[in-house]
Structures are given as C-alpha cells and as structure tokens.
Image 1 (spheres, rainbow, N blue to C red):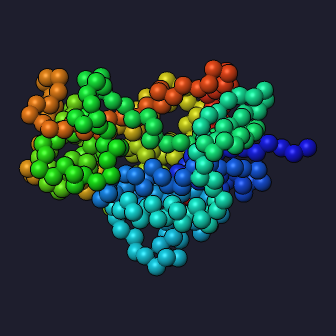
Image 2 (image 1 turned 120 degrees about the horizontal axis):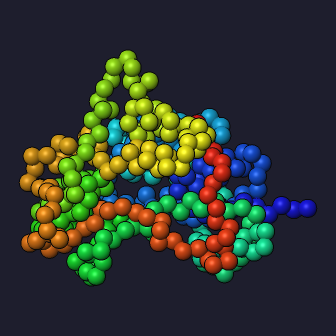
Image 3 (image 1 turned 180 degrees about the vertical axis):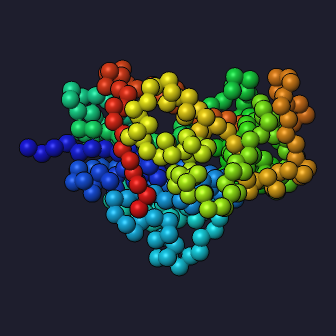
Length: 322
C-alpha cells in the first residue's frame, strides 16, 4: 500500500534542513515554497547576527555546511556574515541537498480524516500523511496598537522594505530594541535619513562573544542561542523538552531577549542618530514610523476542521549541522 508523503510547507533554512533529513531517513517527502524567499526580501546591507558555528543549515551527511560551500565556490568567510552570502549558501544547499523543491505556494491546509489535504495556488491538491509547517515569520509581523490605524504611507514594518535609500533626507522613527531595529536604524542613518530609535528599555548588547580565552568552547554552545549556562541546555532539545512547561517558557524568554550584536555598536553609538525610552504615546516630529517589533503566530487561524489535529509536540528532533 502506497504511503501518503510527508509535506513540508516552506523552503527556508528550517524547511530545507528538515526535508533533507526526512529523505535521508527514507520518508517520502514533498516540499513546497520558494527557496530562501524571506531572506532574499530582507533589507540590503544586513548581516547575520548568528556566529559562524550557528549559521549552517543541517543535513544528515557531511559536506553541506557553510565551510563546504565556501570551499566549493572558492569564497572566503566574512564575519559577520553578509546576508547575500547566506542567501547564496542556502540556495546552494537547496540545489545539492533538496533539488526538487516545488516553488508553488500552499493556499490552504485541511484535515481529511486521518490525512491532510493541501490546496496549492495553481489549483492542484495534495494528500499528506503528515505536514510540517516551516513558513517562518514573514506573515506574522506584529503592529502595535498605537500604529494599527495609521496608513502604510506613515507606518510600516521594517520587513516591508528592501532598500532604505528611499528614506534619504526623511525623518524616521524606528520602534524596537532588537537586532532588526538597531541594524535598520544603522542602515537608515547610512542611507542619509535622520533617525531616532525608540526602545522601551536600555539597549542590550551581545558583548560576551568577545571572550576568546581557552574556556570559550565550554561557555558557548555551537548553536549560539542563550547566555552561558542556558545555551548548552537549549543546544540539546531532547533534554530541554523534559523540563516543566513553565520552566521551558521562562528559559526561552531569557534566551531570546531583544539585543544587538556587538559589531553594531560602532555603527550607531556616537552617530547623529538617537535612541530613547518614550515617556509619551509615540514619536513626534517624524515623517515616517518603521516598526521593528516582534512577530507572533497568534495571527494564524487554522481551518476549523483541522483545529483538533493541532497538538503540542511530544517529541523533539535534533538537526546537527553537517
């Protein structure tokens, strides 16, 4: 009896990595989405915040990590890693590890008895035994209440902009205190905008990575998530999932707090750009409001018939960088 395939929705770093592992395990797999599309639409001039050890996609076999890509293509590693280099690496990984990605977008997902039914944008339907949703954060940008009724000509999310050069000579307020907000403020300033960065609290900087002593490999897990101590716990999800749910949530909040990379400090400190903790409801004297605020999947509403099939994961998988 033919088994329905597992379908992966999304062809970004996680979708591609999961598909590579599933196929290596002999599981019939289909993957839908435009490879690295989210990353290709990010503002030009950006860099990855993650360290080199945490910037490789995962494959079951050796030869697919960032170092392999650089050797194969004759390029040198740059740190921080420029966005175009990471996009090129992701597309190289896709061509070699998951060559038959279907770029068609999934329009809907519904439960169909013990299976799932997916409707594609081109009119096709696909039946799946299991579905892995790896669509990323693109569709889930949060707009704070104070800006929710402003027109796009006045307020927009930074995710909507690929080139900040259009803001040259404009007075722009950026709302947010994480990497995206700080780097967007730097890029806007470098593009000739008058920038004000508005944060709720003092900006946090990831300075601990400056330590290069002999104990570095014990302090910092290769996954580069969380502060020393917690990072090694997060590095092993099979152990992390055994903790009580409340503890997991508290650790996750601490590990992914908004913060800026150390290499951004010189691009914003001492420049003619300002950051402040607002005392009032919003920015004054600005032409444009850019929101570099959080993303939330709470906006996603599953099909009513599928709601009962959405459950919390009872297992975890570890995708080791190859």
